[in-house]
Image (cartoon, rainbow, N blue to C red):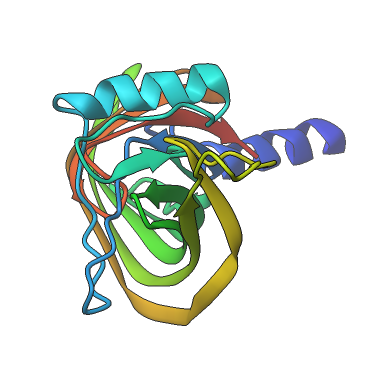
Length: 226
């Protein structure tokens, strides 16, 4: 009898009256494209419209080795933004809150240089459920925190007929050793998702979110109860 009472109490703490796990893990990927502006300002833009959808699909299929052609410069080694977060839902309320870590990398090559960009984030992720009951739960979300941006630059030289390049960098250019590296910059990280969907059971569910900010326009992932 005591075991049954304890088991029932433990289950009650794991799932609230809406069928939302009290403690869960979110793993997500998104179409984030975070361009670096010369002033050091970083702006998160969604690229799901147009080249963004194709870029995200290609990066997932090829493991992040897809080249995305622009007129000039050209993006190489692009990967989608990936995040993992702990989600605490306050039982029998419409609110959830928890920390989230994320990372994004890209490179941009021109005729004279190859720039690497690393973007890591630590934010507090909150959710407000508009429709907390049922198999399909609708919510809105807001992430606030900080991002760490680091970048480095390689100088490229074009090969001539007399040259014998051993490490081609594309378009007849060879890469030299990195010439410069910008010190890490800490900037605000903001993501607003006015609409999100949790579709699935109490233990495992599919997540889809639309919004604007450092993650981009579209985020997809899974939610697993702990």
